[in-house]
Length: 266
Length: 260
Ligand SMILES: Nc1ncnc2c1ncn2[C@@H]1O[C@H](COP(=O)(O)OP(=O)(O)OP(=O)(O)O)[C@@H](O)[C@H]1O
Ligand SMILES: [Mg+2]
Image (cartoon, rainbow over all chains, first blue to last red; front, side, top):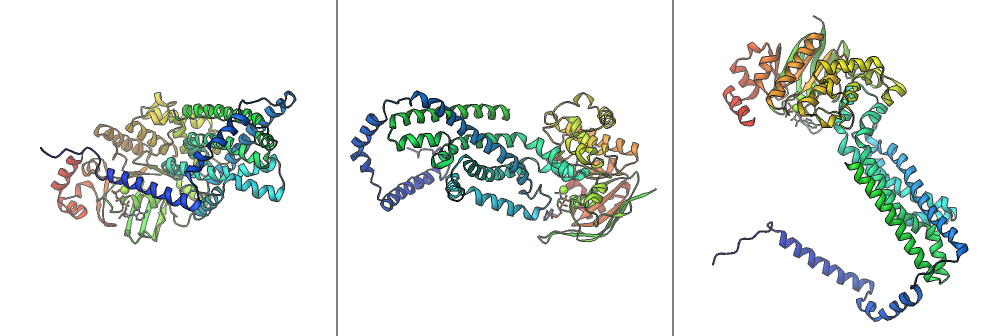
């Protein structure tokens, strides 16, 4: 018999095996380090199940007088995410213009701008929220600021990359025409990158709907705070309805933005 | 004839140590149609891009219409650039905009303030743009998206944009390198006729020796950043071709047909 002919890409199998081994080793090491024992899940399974079935289920509606308040808190969360993302997008656009060597009139500072954005972005919104709450006190305004900072930093990075991908050639030709910097921005960069910008903006809204719920829980208001109040009051069945409401809200927003993004990329 | 461009001892050393141009001297007069030829990396693009200061030279002087290019900045540089049209191998259009919007970009150097930023062109400019498109056989595409055009059509929009600037000099960096032979011929014919009709001097970087010989009034041959030939196409003997390309004419022709 002749040797069987191999169909895979050379070396691929080895790579996958290496990945698998590395993943197993990492799991064992981290489990030891964090004292995590997979058996606790099984051992305490009964307690966990009774908690779910007795405390959480079935979901219960809050008192009728509270319902309008709960619904308006959902609106607050949505508004928080939308306004923070929109205003951050406008600022991000102008900052991103100075974050690309190929576009900025001061190419030497582009690295500084990008570095600053990367630094801000790598601090999660929740951490920003805690920092701001400790210094400015709780409230929707501070929740807004926490979301604003992270989405601003994220979109600056994303917008810079979009600009570098798309507009280099046409920016050069407008430079040759004698166009000024604002003209190059409005006539070359904006039209050729608008779809890319919008797509990142919609993605950022998806992220911020979730983030704004969490920032709300720690003091930013909205449905996150409502949920937290019920959990602290041991009204887990009501909390479950609110969790379902949050899930519904996230799903609806995701579907709308997903649809819009598809429409844009056409 | 009026002198439009003058290179005086121009050198360009890139920061990575490449000497792209070495002591280049030449002048260009009104109405000339000059081809710059030379092997890849000989400095053809560097010459063109230094004329409108897309690249800054390291030594020597370039005079455009009597004004030294390297000293210009800001508003003066913009005014200098609008005198020079440029056509690119990759057309460099704004593809999400319409054809006529791309042509009208040629006016931006003349516009200031809000109007230029918002693209509020005068009716007069729009008429001029349409007339140019008609001259190039593109009037029916005026309101199409620039991305929907073929390569040859895109290059015609590029020509219209450059002529819209009412330039004194037209720079073309390998305008036909991405085109099929028949579109390439159309583009070269158009470049020749549109510039001679308007008295615009034209400098074209070319890889095709036969095209350069056929269309030019003058040929400049570059090798390793130095001008090794500057004269009429008829004076381009086999020996001089070998000097430019470092290989014989036959080798070039075979190379050219194998690449097609
Ligand atoms: N931005 C740059 N930085 C460093 N070196 C460069 C740069 N641009 C060009 N060069 C070098 O300068 C030399 C001349 O380049 P240039 O682009 O002018 O050649 P060319 O004649 O246009 O070549 P081609 O026919 O391939 O377009 C080359 O050796 C190239 O590697
Ligand atoms: Mg070149």
